[in-house]
Length: 297
Image (cartoon, rainbow, N blue to C red; front, side, top):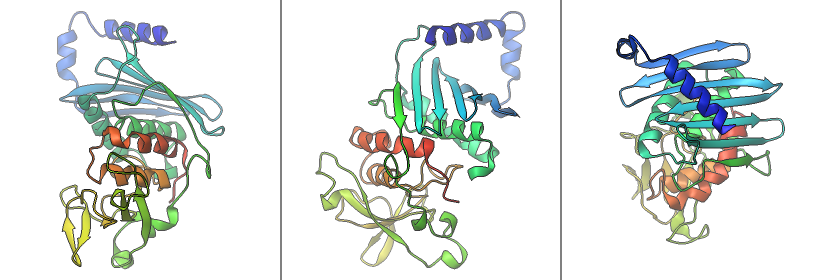
């Protein structure tokens, strides 16, 4: 299957070459180009740092085949939501060998994810093939280089993922009558070189939902005042920020608040980088949440 995909990609690239190829490349417009019809979403995303070609199609009733190509690699997914099983893969287009995502790949995917969120409807209003494409792109945009791209992700509610919708008050928004209402979730927790899940410095008391940011950072309670920043392994600080506990980077187009996504946020926002090896187990645990969990609103 990998060799067939690479051959198809090579044919497509050669068909775009030849006379006038340079002029065609110069004529490309930056941004998202999206084509949608029944059971199919495809298109391209172009920015200065790279180009993404993508497609998502319903290949059987309720089963979706995804393909995303960028920077010489191909990412694929087969989503079967009814069974709670999805298979993901990633490989080099040139020779179909295993590969990994680098920082530049993640940055490009994050920009593509943002463009999809801006263009597509949020939550369940989007077509399912587009929704699962967006979810997979959001997952790949956070994928650590120390986790294999080729893997099977399985999950079902109550076993694979636990919903926390009730903690995301007022549809996750911190506005209007919700402005002064707090609904803490205890605890966003992780294990790392500083101790295990039970170590109180690996735990945060989180306010789930979109509760404002300061330059993309969090707020934490210190001495009775809210301070901008991220406390590094404090003893159970109260924290709030940009869609804490929500699947996907930042505030994505889907609205899933889950236990594993909260713990992943509690790792990468507690003294660790997004692609930190210390947060790999939280990322893996949250993968099925992002791909399969239902929307909260």
